[in-house]
Image 1 (tube, rainbow, N blue to C red):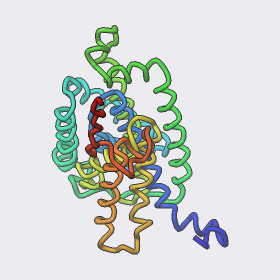
Image 2 (cartoon, helix red, strand yellow):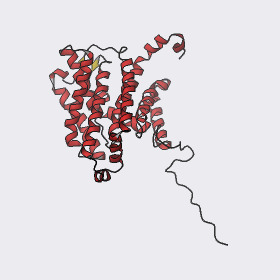
Image 3 (spheres, rainbow, N blue to C red):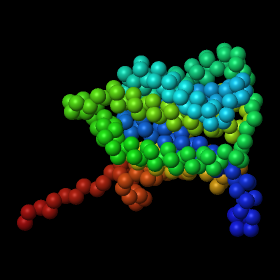
Image 4 (cartoon, rainbow, N blue to C red):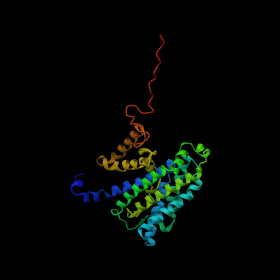
Amino acid sequence: MDLLFTDPIAWWNAHSILFSLIGVNGIAATSIFLVLYSGQLSLAAPGFMAVGAYISVLMELYWRTPFVLNIAAGVVAAGAVGLLVGLPVLRLRGVFLAIATIGFIEALRLGVVPNVPITGEGLGLKHVADPLGGVPLILISLVVIVFLAWRLTKGRLGSAWSAIRQDEIAALSQGIDVARYKMVAFVLSALIAGYAGAVEAHLNFFVEPGDAQYGVTRAVQILTFAVLGGSGFVLGPVVGALVITLLPYVFSSAGDYINILSGAFLIAVIVFRPQGIVGRGGLAIVRPAWWPRARVRAASPG
C-alpha cells in the first residue's frame, strides 16, 4: 500500500490485472442483474461470454480486423445467440430455467467448441493480448453499463420487469406482454455478458473453454455476486463481484485456507444479511430474521 503514495504508476501496473478482473466480473454481474430483476433465474452468462470471447478472438486471428470491430461483433453474436436460446427456454421458470441454461453453457463448452476446428477444438486459442492497456476501457465500460442498467430499471421497461418479478400472472392481467419483456431482459443480459467475455479475452493471451472460464463454476460465481451483493438494486451484484474478487487478495496470507475463509464469509453474509450487502434493511447481528422470537403472553385479568 505504501507504493500507492511513493510510486502510483508502479502501484497501478502491479494491480492492473486485479482491477481488470474486478471490472469484468462487475460487468458480468450486471448482466445477471437484468434477468434476476425481471424474475428469471438464468445462468447462461458464461455461455454468452464464451460467444463474445471466441468471435472477437477469431476475427482478430483470421481477419485482422480492428479491436473495436472485434468487440462489437462478439457482442452482436452473443445477443443473436441469446435471442435463439431465449425463444425455447424462456417458457420455463425458476429452477427449470436455471437447469436449461446450464445445459446451454455445457453444450456450448463441451459440445460445440471442441468440435469446431477454427476454435482450436477445445485446446484453446493463442492471440495477441494487452493486459495493461485494456484496464481503463473496462472500468469506464463498467460505469457506463451500470448507469444504463440503472436507467432501464427506472423507466417503463423496469416497471414491467418489476411487475413480472413480483407476480407474473398479475402482470399478464394488467396487459403486460410478459414474454416480450422477459426476452428483452434476456437479450440485453446476453449482450452485456458477450461484451464482458470479449474484453476479458483480450486481456489474456490464451482463450480456452475451461469450466472456470465459461462453465458451471463461472455461472455459480456470477450468481454468487448477486446473492452476496443483493439483486434488488443494480449496484448490489457489482458490490458482490468486488468483494468476491478482492477476497483472495485481502486474505492472500491465508494460503491454502483462503477457500475456508471465503466460504465462512459468504455464509455469514447469507445468515446475517440475507437481502445482500446493498439490500434494504439493517444488519441482523443480534438476531437474524429467521431466529425464533419469544412469545409475549398477555397479562391475566385481575
